Image 1 (cartoon, rainbow, N blue to C red):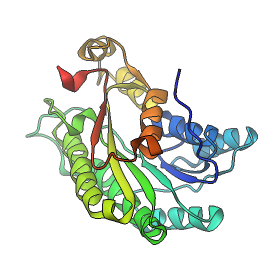
Image 2: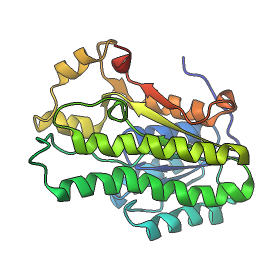
Image 3: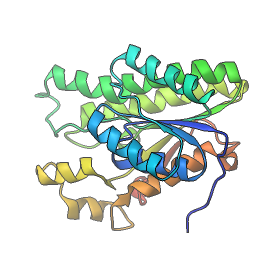
Image 4: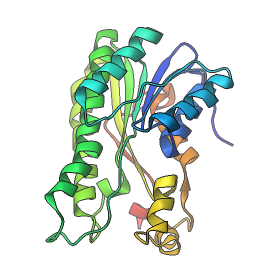
Length: 255
């Protein structure tokens, strides 16, 4: 049984919210009473997600947003605050995976792309979320890193660089903003059963059986399990938790 939270009267923003971990988190925030702004690059999938939540009676907003474009990020955050009056919680989830590559052969364009979304995108989102939270004197931000932010793996140097960077960004900003009433943490998912992982398996970039065996719990995680970790980090139950990179990985990094 999952814990329940009461976020009535609060506002959450989730990036990469049209599917996978982002959509699961948006649903969980909404079910817990929060008004939710969902953002995503895929406008059609985003509309489907926001329509689903609105039909269930939740207060939602769905501004399309490319997190590599800081102007779009600023506009989405500002629109959220203009619509709902405040911003209490943010889950900066938008990210991509790239195919494995020998470090000596990886094109610069691929390195730039994964870092533009996974690292610079988190930086831009957090920057503009903090502008509003700073004025309020309260808030909670969760950035999405990865077990790839905690370990290394052959063939994954560029992706792991982006996710290690998210942790550095998180811990430094957490120290800066904790005295101002704002908590910033990161979640580090293991291999999670999402559309992105399904696509990697279909393309032969990931072996499902091997991925399951590499996690001591012997299965893939679910998007809902990541969402529950995010909600806890945003809740009063984590009120003394600042600057952590929380593994939610079935025991992968504990080995």
